[in-house]
Length: 340
Image (cartoon, rainbow, N blue to C red; front, top):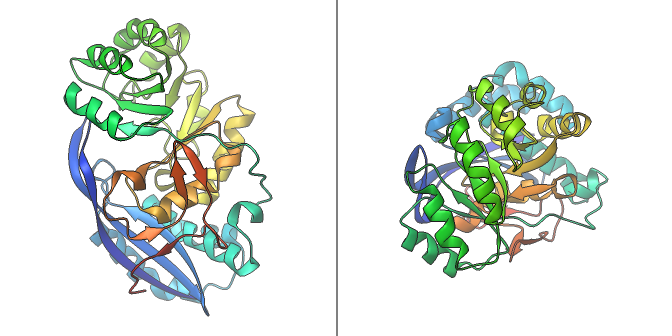
């Protein structure tokens, strides 16, 4: 098995703003595991909130090159288990490698990855389209540019209710609210009935991740379901979300990849939690991996590649929220111009 990496700068269609900052581009690291003519791909992106950079991640991979290329296993789980001691504090890198191994394994078997897992794709959740924080006029412009059945609206401003009220006048689409830790418990509880009347489906991560006491109040009093994002990063966080949230939003990069994500979904189901999977700003490599999980999910947020203008890869297609799987084995995704 050989390993290579390639870095890209993903340029956003619009400045993307959430409660804790704005960005116009995101750096991405694509990892490729190769056996003969078959290649499996994985992706990790730079993220200041989680302290990741492409330079640092590519260095970590390079330092492990000799270790990885000596592994002899056809089991993605065993591959992850062998990597974990080296990368337990580097979940984004672990994720990219784990994705690549899952992709490669399915390609070697001549199956799509979801088929390899034995999943039926008979009923798949629609993905939302994200509207980042901007002026009301700009947010309306984004909605009109991209008619969609479900919008995720980023909030965390001093005009949050004004924003949702204004947007509702221009669409009958379902709304999901993501405050990205920008509210207090009192604000969340007070706003929930108003948001429900505006056909909001859920509230994602209203409070800072460490505000457990506040979330207890919100969970007990909110008339809308609340989902954990920043409060649910790794496997052990699922148990901690019971009694605080109605569901969890799992992100592959944060939890360390496909292998732990599958376990998190199983545990969340056992605990009576709804399951959502979300994305970062990432290319069709990462988004096509998320698509493999669709039969296991209640909700999904996988619009990351739609928000960029220079996707370096092709994979799943998304139209009006509906995902169409890419043709080909594994995730079906591949790089358009590859040096690896």
